Image 1 (tube, rainbow, N blue to C red):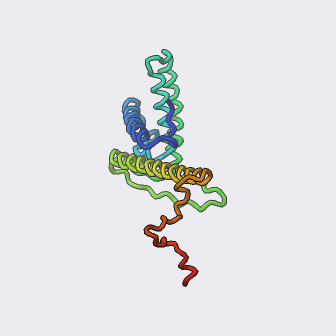
Image 2 (cartoon, rainbow, N blue to C red):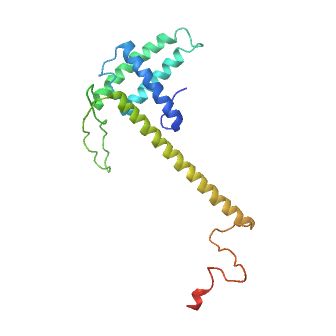
Image 3 (cartoon, rainbow, N blue to C red):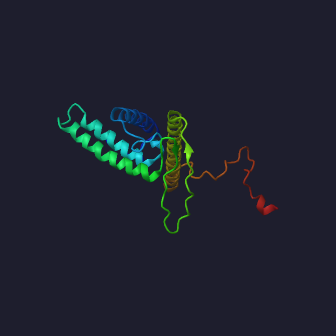
Length: 194
């Protein structure tokens, strides 16, 4: 199945990141890809993530048990095309074997000007990848929690409206509890007596 990185939940994203990383290591080693085609910090560049993810999906489909016998050859053609695109992406973003910087983005009229990307030295790619994945998974969990909270809030509002429409108990959370032992409630008519 193709991977849509924009819609993966946190658990699936974590799994897919590590599987893609294993595929990228294999690809680099088996095909001798250079840093100009496959830099160590590929995971920090969405254009490279999408390209490599698509290439992995193509490889999985082309090497499945029920794949057409010519599928592996088609995948090799895909690899040739992907290598040309990867070189273009890497040249545009400017990441190298030893330095990485965020991909430059064109500022459109009316947008705040983007700051110039500052190169960062690549010290430990594997450690950076682990931090990157942990941050991405945490970000996705926050999005999921916020979405769930919005759903619960909308459900509570809808339930409150339905109770009001049907005149059921618990209609309003703003009403005070009825007075006990003949005493007046906290929301008495003290406003009129002051």
